[in-house]
Figure 1 (cartoon, helix red, strand yellow):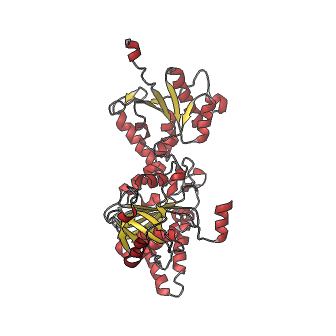
Figure 2: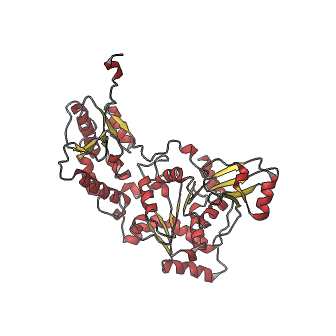
Length: 450
């Protein structure tokens, strides 16, 4: 056999051009392209420079990327290719504001937009390196479409993206033909050995509806103890569960062995209400209760554009949380002392309701931490929040992965979906998907039919 036949053609190296949206999604993105080269258009640095000040997550991502680039470049000039750290890694550089000679995006789509100059940066690389595949990576669908119309390869940023969101972990399973003896044992003692069910391996802290010819039993698989434990309807701060799924959610949030809980479900399923009520029920076990949500400003403008002081700017975004707290308070109409106690929790900051940006940097030790609308967070933001958890802290993320307000996230790429898929089977984690709406029949009509 000849030597030429034995030799294999090496795989084609690519140059990935990163858009600003990718950096704001994951500031360390340029480290995730293996042996390929990464180009950062100079306009991306300009956009990040305009975003570096502020308390919102995108401001923190911009600052983190700028620091990372400064560290990676060292004393070297950044408009030249710089090797990325690590074996078999590619290079990176900052692409200057060049105008390609063949196709000019500004001439085609109009001048004055950073997006079109970013397209020109990719097109200029395509002319400079005709033997390499140039790929624009962006979370902006419209920018990707413009790139493809210019015969430029464009891709979404895939790191942290769930491949099949329709098969996302739900935290619950219905088992049929369960032995009557096992159900009798569960009903009589409240526990049973999980080995009797021959569960699939690595099922984690999972909920089951066990059925036989008799009345079904709702149970929880305590993965550490190897036991099945019955789940009963339990009131939390005078809020009673209205279905089995809500009972499962309450059980997970009251379980001291579970430190991380996610609750996913459409509007009206009771996610936020149950989380706040469960936190208040356990108020003596925690130093403080934080209830927060990310601010997604109107038209992607910072809340500084809104009139008024800081409180008046953020109140509209936190109104749904206050509504849930008010609903809990209304359950004590016959008990003025209990109502006054809830007001006292707020005034003494036993319970703190504030945007996520305002809580950044606080110590999360012995805190019951609720993050509402978690589907508007990136995987990196979710990781950052969890990594700051101190001793005796419990974190609950709630949200609806199909109702996303952030322009560069979707059901597959948001942080809540990523967490649900990544944390399943961990002994400190439990999840439940709420399907049944309990707000009203009219609300259910909107969710189901419209």
